[in-house]
Length: 253
Ligand SMILES: [Zn+2]
Image 1 (cartoon, rainbow, N blue to C red):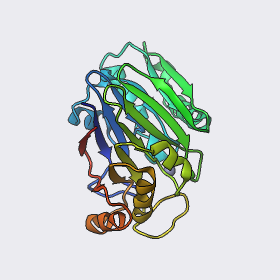
Image 2: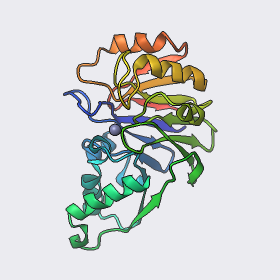
Image 3: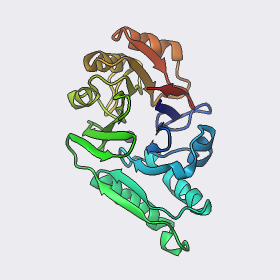
């Protein structure tokens, strides 16, 4: 059975209990990382994911809290002796920032650095742009401060899917991407107030209802988030299961 593990659950300004929001989907043999923040090597190992299980990384946008962990993850993979290629997926802007991040650390000086393959994702709904032995990945644009994608990952064996909104305001495209997913991981940066480029817990519940998902998991949570208040706000608009995300939380799908 596939697992979703929340490696971090904090908003751009986080607190002592949460790393920035990033997650991993783990199958029998492979794992796909979505965004890369915090201390990824330590978090992946704690989550029971070996570094060489990861051949694909999807970056949703290039705000620092979503990609800054990539450099140290690549360093860890190289030190662990990785030889096989790693694929990185993202919008053109995201890949440009990722390459600049790698240039800043002068990767060309790292002896026998493993190959990195960049795959540009178009800024429109894109069905199954990555299909592996165990998973199928689709994406759709969100409405955020910079170009951003939401991601849907379906386990090919069970046909169950998780969708991750990434950072976004309330948007039909995210609902359409998430439709019928078993789990919707949605950002909830505020409790119930509108904010530029983000969603509230109450609105995340509305999105979950519209997308007809079974479980809603709230992430991208602000410092000292009042877990009970966030859960209650989402439950006021969604009758399915509401879970307020916690770092290293594991969900099966
Ligand atoms: Zn952002």
